[in-house]
Amino acid sequence: MENKIKSAFDEIKAEQELKTATKYLIYEHTHNTRSEKPSSRKMGLSAVAACLAFILCSSFLAYSIPVSAISLDSGNTSVELGVNCFDKVVKITCFDNEEAVTPLNLKNKNYKDAVSVLIKSTENCNDSAVLTVSCKNNKRSNRITEEIRTCHSADTQVQPLCGNQALAKEAHSHGISTGKYSAYLTLKQYEPSLTPEEAAALTMKELRERIAFYENDSKADYENETAVTTSSKHHSESTGKHHGEAHH
Amino acid sequence: MRTEEETNIAIEKYSDVIRRICMLHLKNYADTEDVFQTVFIKYIQSSKVFENDEHEKAWFIRVTINACKDVFKSFFRTKTESLDALESYSNELSTEATDILQIILTLPEKYRRVIYLHFYEGYTAPEIGRILGKNANTVYTLISRAKKLLKSELAGEHNGK
Image (cartoon, rainbow over all chains, first blue to last red; front, side):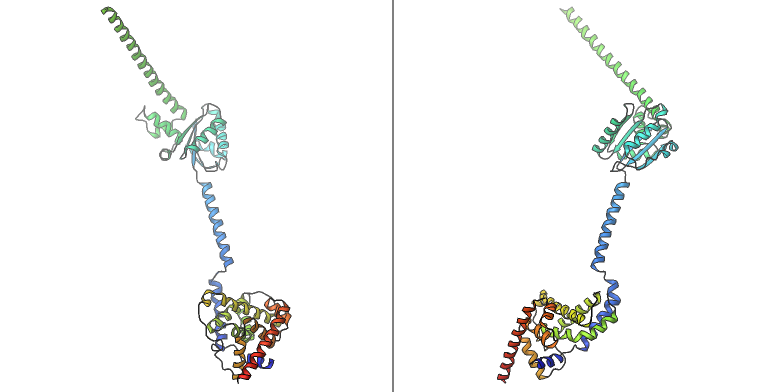
């Protein structure tokens, strides 16, 4: 029986065409497929690499894009700090006194530290610093304003400018900081002929003094007017009384 | 990874072994071609170092049996009708060989495998156990039952004639 089985199986041989087809497939596999078809492991690695690259790029973008701006005007120093979502200074735009700001190395510092350094550097100019915080997000703008207020003396004026990106753009197009441009717009109400270029030549102190002058003036006018109205009222009332008494 | 040259040598050396295993499991020439391709692509991609020719041959037998099992597992294969295993074999066979092979092919798959490995390749029960991943005692049982079945089938055929 064993011999019969052996001789039967002996007759089974692989067909020549089967061998040739397999050899051809191996040839194709070694010459073409190996280079064309990447292995699943390689594909997995490239997918991981792509994910890492995406994460790195998005982190870099998130870090480098400023989401809020803090402008500081004091004496002849006028500078605007671009702050990213991690509260780091990523952009510095000097509108005036660049030579004093550049050596301070404010880039990549926390905005609170950067503002402190800036305020310290302008202490000698006998002019209190005016800080303007502009940001799309109201909450963020108020938070930054509050944090700066708590860190610095009452002399330092901090004003939030929420959601006014157009104002910041306009200010930059005229080559002045957002804070200064905002002061210019206030002054323009009283001096309609004032140009942004003229405002740029003035210091923040001068701008504020002029505004204060007009505001005090109008306040005095208002007070006078109110006083006049009140006195005339009193006068008419008292006259009326007198007239009534006379009738009686 | 192996070279094309090494693989071509292996094709010449082990094609007959693989063809016989395919004949025992598959009833379709296209499936045989697929198994050939699968086995030799696995070989070229493998970096396994074989101790000797016997070790390499055992590897080929094990991989071929697994590839044949995979063909049966595939959804498409379960939904298609197959031709007769010997019909798909294109070379001429003697009447005696056809008769005995047809008897072997009527037996359940588990017996066909041990008949080939024990009676033709000359493997012992423990060796077959290692190749098929089965207990040696189970293989002993399979061999003795296969022998019995074959004898009775052969006797039946002889009486019929």
